[in-house]
Length: 116
Picture 1: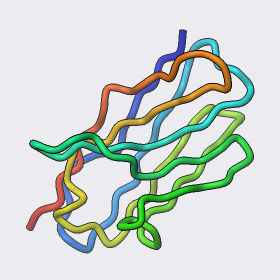
Picture 2 (picture 1 turned 30 degrees about the vertical axis):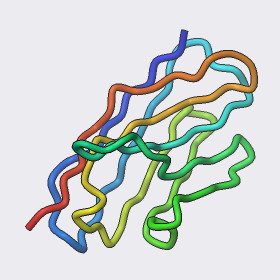
Picture 3 (picture 1 turned 180 degrees about the vertical axis):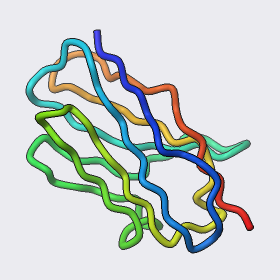
Picture 4 (picture 1 turned 120 degrees about the vertical axis):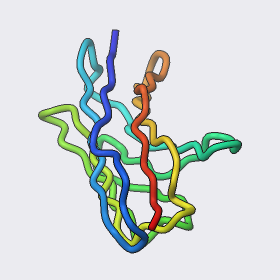
């Protein structure tokens, strides 16, 4: 069983930065994708960024150039560096691990609030 724990959320002013982290523990396969999703109040959860085991990233268009996803395979962690934040980035950010075989696992989420 895999467990994901996110951290690094908080309150930041527009234009500010935050760095989210997600640590995976448990029985983890050697090949898996890691991703970040977010859910704003009253809206559906949406994809933000993902990264493959080989380190190939993919981003939501509205965050491209502002957010950077990275991973440490030795530590089974994924990070999301978020710069130039704006109020539209507010929401609960969730980490997701998808193995090559088997079911995906979600973290419990971390709140990000961008407000002056």
